[in-house]
Image (cartoon, rainbow, N blue to C red; front, side):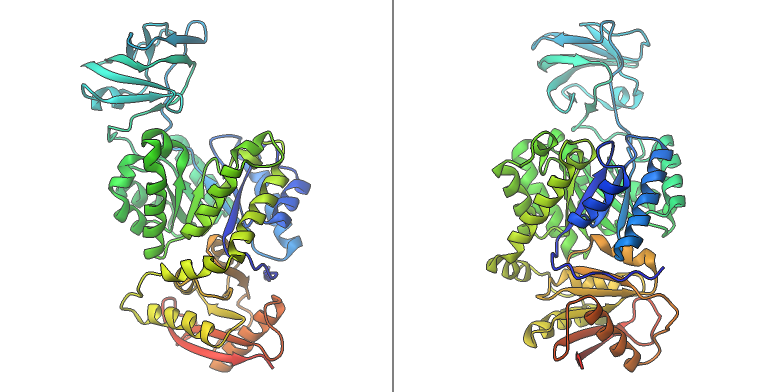
Length: 479
């Protein structure tokens, strides 16, 4: 299938999570038409059959709309939880003592099972344990081989299988559980574009996922642990893309630290030329309301001004009452910000300096020339996506058309800022500069971005068909 992208001037992309509220064909198509560029399959919920059905619908909708759609398979990761209680829940009073142990017996107001010996062995006196998304906080007062004694620093109601966060502790556990490995194999067999890697603590976690993926999908590392922030440079370098996962990150970091962490992650990802997605609670109130709060609209706008490649909707579209409205209003917010006269100047003023490579110099020059000659588009011939990524990092004043020979790479580029991906297939091999110019002009015209008399800037590599050889820049007039 050859995919041809329609003209879509919005540069910042939208990721929409699918779930019970958004799994039928009509809704998925409506979400795509409203502005979703990438659909997220959350493997924390649903069966393999559920995800396979959604994948099939997305591909059918993609063919109907005639533009690439990316799919993100988000694996659960090592989610830590307490056990169960005799009556389903207890109330922990502030100042009381409470034990976490390995006993299978149902818990009560004095103890509960913690089925994670790695926490018990790694914790020390003074370690903090956050329960139920940080609503309760325990401080370790004594340790034993099979238990932790704690003092309840912040009390409240604790019910069966609530989550546990350990912000002070680097746990000796991999980011991929046995369940994740099965989910990962299944998702790669389906043919998704990105694997969302959860609860990464160390660079080794990313290396393990990359080895399993074997280039079949991009690894999108979710930064949601303080330990990941401590290793951020190496984690981002090893990743293909990054997600600012503010849910668990906001539990384990103080609230005032999360906005700075978001800006740091976005800045570093852009510097390294890696797409970055801002996620979690962006339009949270729209789970049950048809319009967002003003603060939520400002939150989305801030991510766009920060230079995020994409913004993401989670429960808003997966389980909310107004999934279509959520995508529509996010599209409107992003578009309004990008219409602002100051926005593009901020993007370009924060552009990292090109590295000492020919491909980086070509990308930087393409953006400068496009502005100087008022080009309608930059057309990037990109075999594996690298050329389009480099030019996107420049945040040029005109759209980028990423021409690639495969549907797979076109879909991966759906998360990249400013890139309108087109799969041109391999039936017409690019062998000469004249062929490059002809294909570039045809792509710019067919996408609706250019017409007779307009100028396009073209970036390609000689010899053609060799990844990483971007070394040629041309300016062409549309006849």
